Image (tube, rainbow, N blue to C red):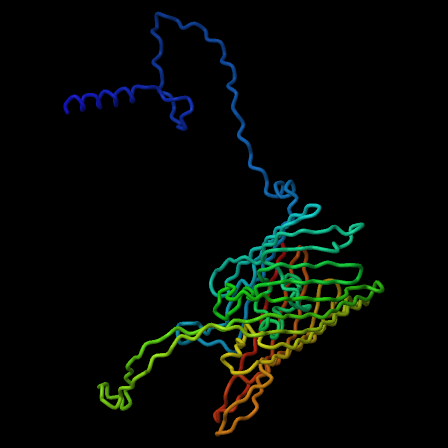
Length: 453
């Protein structure tokens, strides 16, 4: 053991006495050398040759790298403040917040696309603070395309991945270009998210447009509890056929018909055991014989599927005048068992199919080169056959939601858009003192600032 200690000491001494390597990443100044003796004049030393210093490579600019890779990078941020009559400084059962007043980053998106002759890719991320800071995938497509002659739109394109749902006009309109803050109530209810996972085929020939898709049927942002998973093997078939033309320079016309055919999913129920329940009927805090109840167990119930469909039509007309463009748009949709965002449609629970009807009409007017104004009326009935039990009678119930929106704003240089929107909402979601459905106070005002990349 003593010999081992001696060997360790010698090794440490040798390591300390060894000169540092030339490639050591240490910046330690050399120790000063003592001057030569006075009796010996030092020989003149020729000037040292300049030491070549290796130039470090400068990092390439992101823009130069993007240009070299031939990437198309785009993005925008939508930040807004909102005042909502329905807001309360309270918490719901379970802890959900009821405050709806404040500021929020509605969308912060970055999209990257790359095209080759016969192929392409598209990738888009979305960030927001609607329910706390969150980042998610908005689009991810692998694309094959047949180029159009003379630079025209490709007649055939095929995309696989997280892709857009080709239904109607409003759903396929990019959020960056949409004038109003959000889509209409019916569109948000039937399609709570704009993308879905599947395959899509679309193209154009002259003024004609078409799109067909086979999708999972569970769009992103759904609130039915499946968390973007596909619970059944059935797929939704979605399609749109339309036209987009400009017969003269001051007039544009676009329209089409759309459809959805698919199958929804009703989750089953687990088996339960027999149990004993105590209900404190006299509220004395003591268990009494008459307050004990037996709850029999139940067998498991298997899951099941149900049919769902939708049919829609849309029309958009643009007219240019000395004041600017005037745009009219309208859309109507009839559907069955397709509400996946507002009142979740489940005919197995309801006992019958739930029919939906939605429509909207809007007008937008340019006020010169930098200002605009518009109005929209949208209507949604989540259940055309709803009934309400009051006073021992079964009466028809009106569940329609009508929203009147007024919009104004300005377009500023460098891709900046400022807009303010007032929403007057007429519904039957509240109850009066007699239990009769009444209008819920849920009007709101939203101011948004959008800046494009």
